Length: 140
Image (cartoon, rainbow, N blue to C red; front, side):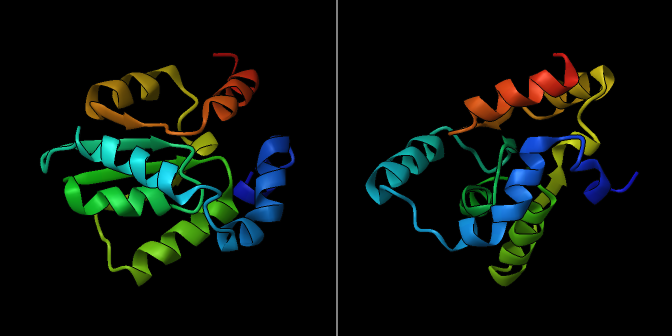
């Protein structure tokens, strides 16, 4: 089953795929709060860090952090969001980010163990609701 066919199994992915272009055009509701979150996160990052971002959306936060770390793995349940994120990273000439559709590769317990050992820094600034939803699909 390809990624787009899988969207029918994941209703949240279908929703985010449908609104991805509109979402990408929206401004951050409170730029000051967002910049405060970025600054706080930046204070924890080192040039040798490998960062896992869960719920990366269109990649804005991952692209912001990428120049400050060795590598970023940014995930989202929406193929359309990931497509936009990849295009934004190319346009920004940021090359140390790997954008992945989360549900197609993160579900196995073995891979979750690998991620927790390989990615010591995780960024999930605004995705608690998405985690709850994702766990419902994978029976965390």
